[in-house]
Amino acid sequence: MGATDETSASMHDSLHAPARFNRTCQNLRTMAKDLGVTSREDNYAEWYNDVVKKADLADNSVVRGCMVIKPHGYAVWEHMQQALDRMFKETGHVNAYFPLLIPKSFLSKEAEHVDGFAKECAVVTHHRLMNDPNGKGVVVDPEARLEEELIIRPTSETIIWHSYKNWIQSYRDLPLLINQWANVMRWELRPRLFLRTAEFLWQEGHTAHATYDEAEQETLTILGIYKRFAEEWMCVPVVDGIKSEGEKFAGADHTYTIEAMTQDLRAIQAGTSHHLGQNFAKAFDVTFQSTEGKPEYVYATSWGVSTRLIGTMIMAHSDDKGLVCPPKLAPIQVVIVPIGRGDERAAVLEASDKMAADLRATNWAGAPIRVKIDDREKESPGFKFNHWEMRGVCLRIEIGPRDLAENKCLLANRVADEKQEVSLHQVVNQVVAGLDGFQSTLYNRALELRNANTKRVDTWDEFKAVFANEGGAGFVVAHWDGTQQTEDAISEATKATIRCIPLVALDPKDEEPGVCVYSGKPSNKRVIFARAY
Figure 1 (cartoon, rainbow, N blue to C red):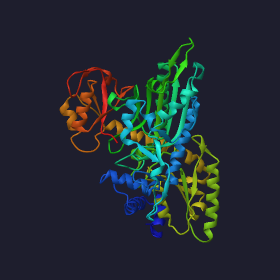
Figure 2: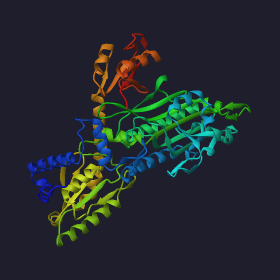
Figure 3: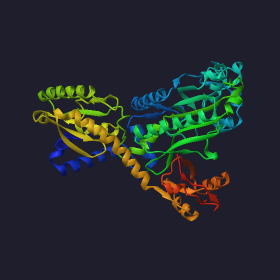
């Protein structure tokens, strides 16, 4: 639903008429509602689904639990890939690719690992179809059953360590630092676009080391990369820490994580880095000859982030007008909307082309500024404004015949609800400053939300009161006695889980010993509890 020409004109002149600008903002909110975006306050889950679809990021597949990532959504993922891939390679990692199908027997070699994924595995049992003898399409050929079933990879540790056995012979072959960009499948009963899908895209790193300490340093290096990416690219503040035994990766010695907070005050695990010890090396008999000439098992790590990051970004920043995307990840950072008809339009389009060329010739955050000119003639300016706000374009430039005559344009900011007059000679500088400010505004806003919703409690009554209602309750920092029994009891009573034991406390006092909020037993330090996605 587009704005009328009268509304569009008022939008363009709004800088000179504050009351008119306020009506314009209200008109945009009304249009967003008409387009089907549910308010976050009314129904956060529906709001999220609306934003994903209306922002043209993804759609449901005919295969239950799977998704179609549309070009606009895939562009976000590509920017994430490029940044992370560069950071991995800067620390010595290289990319490879391993098979999608894994022999079932491989998953049986590491008991804890298979137990962790058994209920999520999709199994290939036959290798051929045939025409249905009854004439009803095709059926599985009963004569084509596989001698050994194949598992569609839920993660690749087993197939990769089978290869590593042949690749690693000596300490000279170490460290082995390999990453792959791939898809995986984990059968999902309650799918949600980007957050939980049966098939999703990710990267998974798998490394081998001569010593425990080298593997430990690797896990922390990757954790640092993930934290830097989340905060500097996604504008999402995260807490980095170690998972409890009950929450660690199946088959790991221990797991590190980064945990973010969404606007509905739930936690979301944004990335994990696992120290696998020698578990997989022993399961697949991967040894190396040490400098002393002795055979020793290697130490392993694995780590990964997925398209779940896109869901995290949406829930951290977006609003009731649609997607809000950090400039570093936005498929389109600036949209230029030429305004005018007839003979006047040609000059405005020419000025828009020059402006776009100047912006594209300018690097911001290490890449040319990404610009789109919306020169559609059949859509009103108001429709275009709403269209690009819904899709998360950071800055909008409006230019019409009167602006051109006065050597200026209007620059609108997606999250500031304001416009500013800018000289055409200053457009590039103002856009660069606008992108800088946009990036820092998103991070600071998310950090303020987290700080305002992080609570410290000391008694079980206080703890239960925080989680008395359904839904998110923010981060609760409390003492825990370190036992699985207490962790399970707290989760059963409140649906809150231990998100992590922070590597660096949010408050120095959190490092002081105390007593467990549930059992009253001694506790070394506070941990973070939350309800999570």
